[in-house]
Length: 417
Image 1 (cartoon, rainbow, N blue to C red):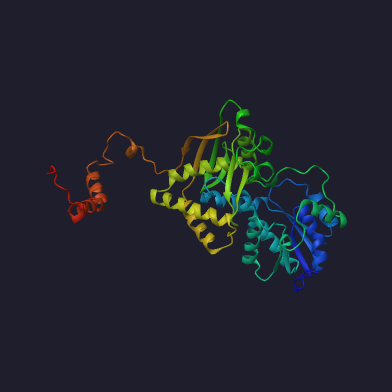
Image 2 (cartoon, rainbow, N blue to C red):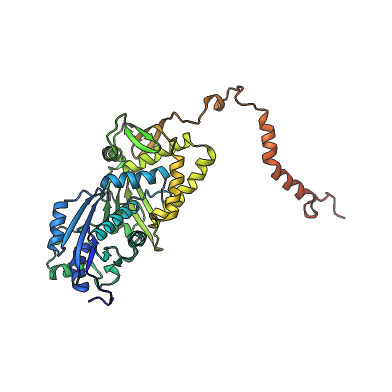
């Protein structure tokens, strides 16, 4: 039994079907003597969920919940982060970070519905995901116990895990292990480990799966028009296919043009720098288009302030602080800014690049009459003099003070001797 004396009768495990979560099922039963319920959340991984269910049961799970979270993932997480303009460290579009809170939320809901007294996950003690899951657990079910086997067991390598699986008759894949550790959902596909751990240069071409090499992309630019309503994507090339299909289609179009690759050395929450490769084809296009519409529809002060909010919002998501008062408060601010962010943006996709071709909105604050070089009555140039005098008053006063202060007086020029 585990050294922890608190008895556990039933635990709900966030289950992916990989080696780690597969052996956690018998490990929990062996070390805690508890019933194990597996919860599989579908956020667009494209797994064989029937096979996953059978595998979890064969590994010792008493029940398996397979939850389709794709629509909720898009509308309640991806779109909100897009509206905020949330990008971590200027490059990472938060694909894995945004998936964790919805998975943890559903895991808690399953635990409460089945009267479980513990939540378990297969995250290692070196990554960000352990923090994301457990902070969500604390926010949504503070009374439930959390079990993190990687912080307790003596298994230290894949070989150890395979041996444990063999001894407990846990079915494991017999195919060659992928060089990379990957995480996939509707928004992105991430790649870590393998060659990326030792080489900080360009990731090998075999790492990429959703996007083709920009060098191999079509020689003609692909034009795409995205329609937004209050900051949310609603149409693609004039058609409204629904959120799920819009994302699917745009992923395909952008990926075929080599768009959406990110090579990033990032700062993990736990203090480690990691090298990862991310593919977010649709996300890259949507962020670029949404930024243009924000710039067109928001006044200067709001637009500038929102850029700071976007940075903080991204940090909160990355650090697992989705279910917090601050994130919710920032969301209220973002929602208010998006009321008039409605319109269309046309982009050109060409060999990994995104080019803005057009942007239109009924709420556009761009006024050709004022912006044009032709001088009209809408803008009186004489007003600029008073504006500059008032704006420059602190600068002028500081300069005058410096000139008249003892240390600021100019010395008289003269010859020596």
